[in-house]
Length: 129
Image 1 (tube, one colour):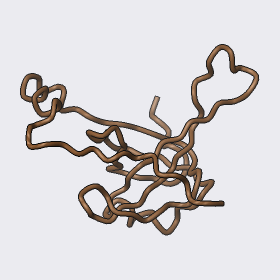
Image 2 (cartoon, helix red, strand yellow):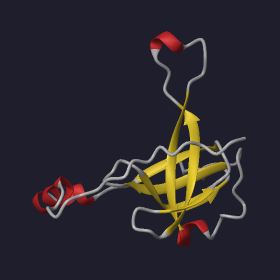
Image 3 (cartoon, helix red, strand yellow):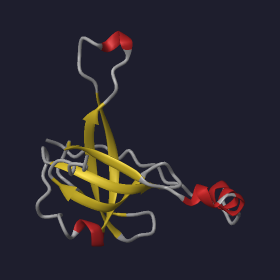
Image 4 (cartoon, one colour):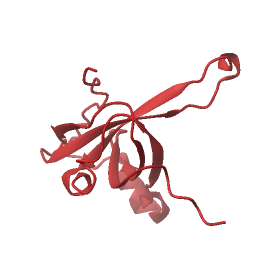
């Protein structure tokens, strides 16, 4: 299996604060940014460098996509690239392989990417009733 293509686009900001900074100053509720993603690793993890130059692990996570009314005859799958900082990846990095189930807690980056803050291998934890 070949390495997955890079989906991440670099987001280069100028010297002006971005819209997120301006919005946060107006409404503190907009500072909330939490993402939960579960799926299966579509490829083995890749070692790379983040936008800031720090080492990261890149995960390509596949998950079922909602069916469109005209595609019910076949299952749809989507994928998302997740950037995992070194400190988070060290806990599970050696265990992760293509085909493994994962659960990620993270945040959306300003460039639309996903940055993991927690990573668990195996299916998502059961929620209490």
